[in-house]
Length: 292
Image (cartoon, rainbow, N blue to C red):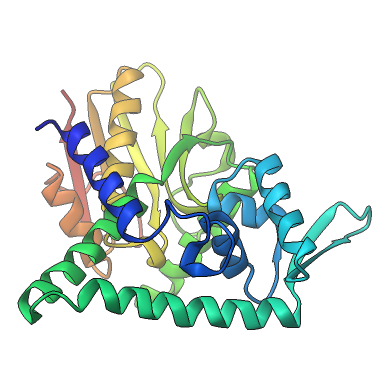
């Protein structure tokens, strides 16, 4: 059976088992889409953030919200200077309905597990956790952004803040070798940003050296919330592919001994430790990799 066939079979089994095919999800008289939106609103959320989180078309989300408003479960209010920032909130009736959905969801989950012996329950729960992790990884997108883009700024600021916490002597970007905005814009370089649910969750930069076949990896960072998804390896591989497309044959980088997981990633990705090639004051390891 092909990979595609396995995925489609899995989708059919899951949608049937969780009741997604029924008109009234969890016997509450509304489809799964409405129930999910009701649950995601929680204490209140901007509509644009809700749309990004669920990956829904704006028109479809508006119809879902209108249906929930008609039931008296949700209110959508305008805000901001121009009133265009819309926020969805649960009414008291909506809060009560969400609690009932949680109760019934717990019962439905128990019904899935109940027929299985303990060993199979453990296997199923572990498999579900692994599938959820991998599906989350598949939803991450990576694209090149201008260093001045808000998402890029957030990543670099988080990178600097984390190094400041983890390095023995702290981290001052002014003391480190430069990776300024102009050095990370084409044709001088590039900055790749990973996004999940419209939120930036990782980055890596490449400093190209015109008329040379060598480039440097800089600003490698992954948000703690998504570590373990293989995103660091993916960002590094994407940086290598794009660098090779610019004629780069050798990639170099330096890193601090406090970043043990980064050191392990570089070694596992084929980077070889070499003699120091820079005067980076925060570096304890220097690596290089010959690209194919």
